Length: 86
Image (cartoon, rainbow, N blue to C red; front, side, top):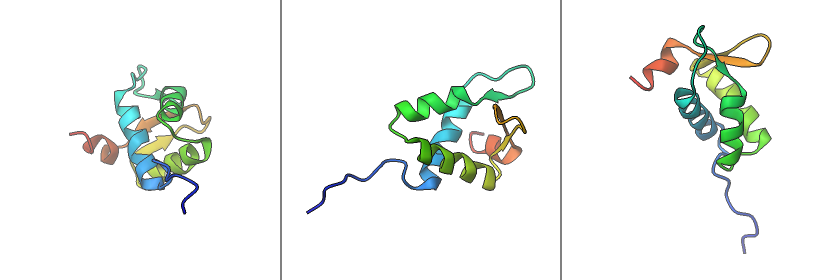
């Protein structure tokens, strides 16, 4: 018997891919930065949890797809992250 359903973003790699997709769809500012709230809320609305978001953003940074501003309020694509959509 199974009581809990599998979560769509329980795997950090899947969460990271979803966050990168959301970041790609978000509008950047003049410095090519993406405000974190432009990917945070859509991720949560897509069924992700706060913990899955945290794990996904850390995995995206580890994979070299995104870099986080020291303030924590912006992310930017790296070349490797931009190449995912080239």
